[in-house]
Length: 552
Image 1 (cartoon, helix red, strand yellow):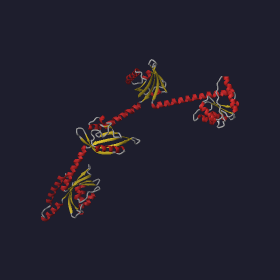
Image 2 (tube, one colour):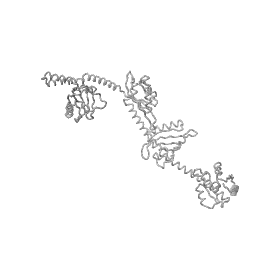
Image 3 (cartoon, helix red, strand yellow):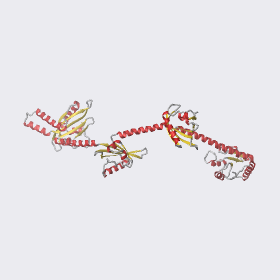
Image 4 (cartoon, helix red, strand yellow):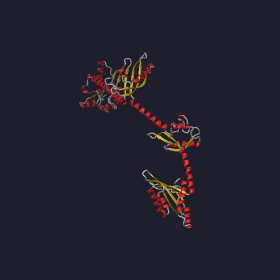
């Protein structure tokens, strides 16, 4: 490559002269610009390039850089020619990748041919060095990968009973570095005796059917530390023309930690399954579309069905589910809400075996992965039949108590002393001529309802009961909205903690207005009617209150 026709002619004649002299067949391609030369190098892959340092469109350094095209080395050997006397050009060209540099003033047939031969030799040496370095780097990477993955490989000469390890793989299993070549007996000696019979049987079965490869797992005892490790060996066998095994190429993996992790996962799954099946609640895992994926033993025993009869089917299809359009529509709506991220809860009557009907509190909870994608729904059901039965019985009992209190004009109350929270029955509000409170009641709310003339005496009686721990018993008046007063008898008992501190007071109020009016009338008619008559009447009255309310 040269833009000087005279230099092109000289180089061509020298090459033809040497070709005729040495019996070499040269094919010469000439270019006068860098762009044309680059195109020729890419399309024709020459054996060598003679490059004039100064070209019309670029210099030699730019040409070399573009010829590399980002690679470390040139794709062809290059000899740089120049008429300049500057030695720094030679240094720059050689650093840029050229193999030889030849000033034009020294140009002669033998010098030019020697420069070309030298450039080609150096190019070949550089390529070989690069290949050797790449191979060494690959070997280092392979060794690092084997160490990180605890993988070793070997070639086995079956007839000679010799094993050749690669890349120091034998060290990963506890052998010495100088044991890269070993006998079968040395390799077999580290296997645990308990596994040998199985390994031999598997090997014989593989050879008998002429299998090209297989995988086997066994345990070894490392010869350096005595530690027991789990090994998986995958190998390929080459057979000769007579179908006899010749060579075996094997990869050996240390799977000790992997198998330990798998065992831990299996143990964890077993524990979870025990909890899943051991709970007294019904639990089922549902796909986002409502398909029943897994049901626990409690649920299967309740519906008296095997798992295969319900798993893989819609959740509402088991025979326990109510056979009504409304129930199925309610379930579909609940599943739809749960798939949108809502935790749904509802009660339903499920049909058990032998005409058993159970009230079940059902909840549907979505479970999502780390990215927020919905994985499945957890359906949980609690048999609340007894609770509902108890709630209905309690409601009936409370209704009977309410009717009894209304008939006897008896109100009940409870005071949490520590929290200062007062709870009244509906009849107690009526007795005090008060509307049912829309907010929590406190002690002072009650005390304000007491007649002002009786308030101090009543408060003192309560304080005395708190201090002494004795029963509380007093009478007071309340003012009625329409005018006049109502007399109430108030009696309570104190509940204390283990250290004697007051905790709660329970008691009753009864309307004694009629009794007080009768007593006042008796006193007015018969002044000798005394306090003993009052006490006798009062005792009979409290006996009646205790019979109605259970407060003695």
